[in-house]
Each structure stands twice: as C-alpha cells, then as structure tokens.
Length: 528
Ligand SMILES: Nc1nc2c(ncn2[C@@H]2O[C@H](COP(=O)(O)OP(=O)(O)OP(=O)(O)O)[C@@H](O)[C@H]2O)c(=O)[nH]1
Image (cartoon, rainbow, N blue to C red):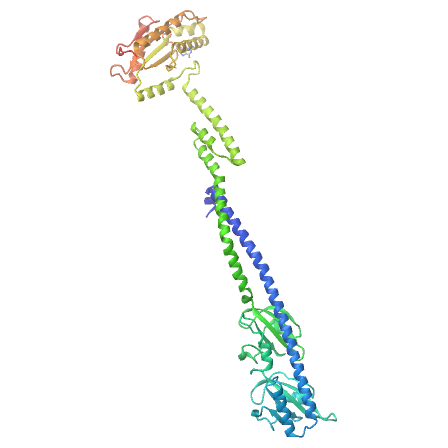
C-alpha cells in the first residue's frame, strides 16, 4: 500500500488500520516482553538447577572416593600384617572385591609392581608385573593415590585407586588397589547416570586433561573435549554456570563443579531448546487464547469507526451539492453525535445558507433590469422557453414611451430614468400576479399575460395607457405610451414571431398618432 492509497483511504478504514497496527504492535510487544522475561527466568532457573546438581554430584563422587579410600585403607592395614602369605592376600583380595561393589577389580602389588593377588581370578594377573601408570604411580608416591585414567594391562580404560601397605614397623611393602573400568558399568557410572533424563539433560565428568571420565554416550569416554568454556573453568577448580555450545554445536545451559579428591569436573547440562520448548508452546497458547477477544475488539472498533466516519461521509456528500436547495435539509438530517462533526455540520449549514442567499441574489441580478427592477431580456427568454415547453398560451403587450428622446433632451437623462421607473411601477399596478413584465430596450417594455386572450389584454393595455396619461410625472408633462398587442399561438404563428408581431403593432400605433393601442389582426379572438 503506497502513500497515495493511504491518503485516499476513508476514515473508517484508516481508524481500523491504525487500530490493527496498534493492537498488533502492543500484542507483539507484550508477548515479546513477557517471552523475554520468562525466557531469562527459565534460563536462570535451569542454570541454577544444573549448577546445584553438578555440585551435588561432585560432592557425592567425592564422598564415594572418600569411602573407597577408607575401604582400601582398612584392607591395607590388614594386608600389612601378613603380606608374605599368598593365600591370605588372595582371600583378602576376594573379600574386598565381593564385600563392596565399588570396584571392577582388586589388585595387591608389591613395591616392584608385581601382582601378588587379584580379583576376579579371571583376570589372571597374579605374578605379572604391571608397568602401567596406576601401579607405577602408587609405588612411586607411596601414598593414597587416585590415578588419572589409563589403559590397563588387559586393555581396560580404568582409574587405579590405591592405598600403600606397610608392615608393623612402617616399612613400605606395596599397595592394595581397586580399579574402576570407565567403559564398563561401575559404581561411579551408576551414581552419575541416576540424573540422566529424557528431556535432554545429561551429566558428564572430565579429568584434568579434559578427557571424558563419564559420559552417557559410552563411546565418548576417554576422548578429549576442546573449546568448551565450562570445562576450562571446572578443571581450574572453579564451579559455576554458563551457556555453552557443545561439540555438536547445540546451545546448552551448563552448571559445573569440581570433585576435590581428583580435580575432575562434573558438568550437568540441558539443551537451551529443550528448556524453552514449554515456553514456546505457552506463548502459542497465549496467542491463540487472545485471538477471539482481539477479533471481537476489532469488530467493535470497526463498528465504532463506521459510526465515527458516517456523519463525515454524509456531510461530504452534502458538500458536493451545496448549490442544491435540498442539500440543507439533507445535512440537517445528518446525526452529528460527536463534537467535531456537530461543529462541521453547523459550519456547513451556515455556509449553505450564505451560498443559497448569494445564488438567489445573483440569479435575481442576472434576470433583473437594474433601473426599473423589472425582468430583463434573459428573464423574458426564460419565461418564453418555459411557456413554449408547457404550451402555455399568452398575449404580449409591447409598451413604448412616446417621444421619450424629447424627455431626455429637454429634462436630462436623469429625469428620463425617473419616467422609466414610474412607468415600470404603473405596469406592475396594472398587471396580475402571474403576469411577467420586462424592460427589453431603452424605453421599451414587454408585458406577458399567460392564458390571456387579446381582448382581455386590450383592456389591461387600455387601463395602463389611461393610467400613464393621467399620471403626474413632473417635471415631465403629458407622458403617454403606445402599445402593440399580439397573441400566441395565434394562427400558426411561431413563438419567435409573436414578439415581432407585437413590435409591429407598436410601430403601427406610433404611426397612427401614438398614445394608442394596436392589436394584431392575426391574434385569435378567443377569450380566457
Ligand atoms: N433616460 C434614459 N433614456 C434612454 C434609456 N434608454 C434609451 N433612452 C433614450 O430613449 C430614446 C428613445 O428615442 P427614440 O427611439 O428615438 O424614440 P422616441 O423619442 O421615444 O420617439 P417615439 O418612440 O417614436 O415616440 C433615446 O433618446 C434614448 O437615448 C435609458 O435607460 N434612460
């Protein structure tokens, strides 16, 4: 829609368009604002919840390591009492393996990394020298150790948790260790998997080298994760929450916390989209729920807009025909029910009144002789046209002042004008109400008598002639008139000819001596 078509839009549509625009803008604004507020609240809540959960799982995992360390510590004390007894070591290893489901395997090694006993038996490790990082570190440090993940002698990715074994004198003998196979089901994975849910939320654990210790997707365990800001923070020992993009490019709301015992990081996260899905559905429901009322409001506004526009449209259509006398009545009927339209109506009625008055005056002026106030030639022609149309029979009297040139010459033009005005008054007095009288020349007048025969007209003319003859028109003495009479339709005479015939009769009267009347012989003798 361009500006031109907007400019031509009617008020009703304009109000409706503006209302629709403002309703849409307000609705969009309200929905957007509420969406943004709720979105932020949901994000904050999800981040908080993930942070709290990550912290809880980190604490639980730390407790788990604490507990297994105690179990191993207790076993180390017992083992230290009879370290040279292979049967005792095998029994103790079996007890430890069966008593708790914390470990996937148990191994007792001497200070040269040689396995003295292990469980389960199926591993067949007894007698083997283990040069993998876990046993090597345990013997090197001779302290309680939780190793970083590594590949075991039989190819398992595992964590080696060990306690040093010393004899009664405090001499270092070796270590007792439990392992957790990261790619197998283990106590740690059962603990961490308890949170995994179908709404897309999951939890994973990384070690100091950013390698996945635990992940719901078992295939990923042991792989390193790069470019994740949450992981960078958590392995630095910082717990917190943030929005991150995961390795598949999905936006995630992550909470993270460090496990003090290992320095590992626990990250709990949920896809942003899953968090906001309910909000999107809610917004759609709000939009649909508000539609019926919005439509009802629009219908009501449309109705109001029509009611507002109607008086203006009616006034405008009235304004197009202001010269028509019926327009004032039409405008009077317009129901201007509000202030502006009422004022407009008042102003238009005032304007129409003035216009009609001026038109009437101009019409009168255009048909009136200014000297005498009688009709002029235009008025005469109009009357003749209308009577010809209506076939109105009439008699015409052509009246002319005798020797008027002499009046002007003797008394001046001004006095001559006065004589013409007085003659006009005598004509008015002698005529009837529906007669038409005009001044058509200098001192020549025409009187049209509708539905009047020549005989009656003759009597009227005679009355006029006598009245003028008797009239005192000082300072002009003895003013007389000559009159010629003709009738229409007469005997086949055309209307244009009847004036000519009246003129001829007038000149005949002049020729016959003036102050007299001549009637056209062709005029029908009929009377009305
Ligand atoms: N005062 C005055 N004189 C007019 C007017 N119009 C025409 N006249 C004069 O009327 C006179 C008409 O004269 P004529 O037509 O010669 O005729 P007349 O003197 O009346 O003589 P007859 O008609 O033959 O009796 C002229 O002198 C015109 O100047 C007018 O409006 N006012």
